[in-house]
Image 1 (tube, rainbow, N blue to C red):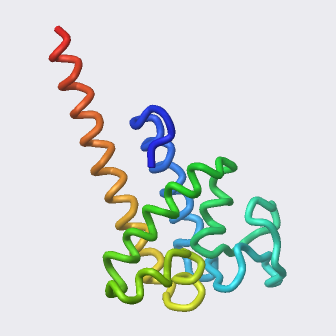
Image 2 (image 1 turned 45 degrees about the horizontal axis):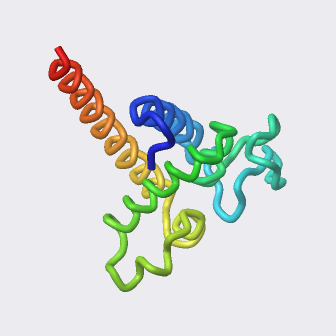
Length: 140
């Protein structure tokens, strides 16, 4: 999950996840079946200035151009989906966040997955910062 320095990566992931969640907070800005659409419902790239509605993954792409960060957050969100929505038999078939967004989720469920992923990132960031402070004291 970490791409180099854990604290910097977690901070970036948290920032991107919060922006992506905010982008689709209103149901009119969330879509199923496409990464992003214009106000007229025409499919477009998520990072297009014309995009007004996004799926869970499209919102991540719209929030950063860093594909590694998108994949790391998407994997975390898939862990949340696996933990919260499906039994073990179904999990193996659902390792694609788009599948959850498009075929199995309501807008509310997608926001709940974002909220839980953000909580996990915040918790991990607190832990990493605490660990770093402890390592600094050990050197003194």
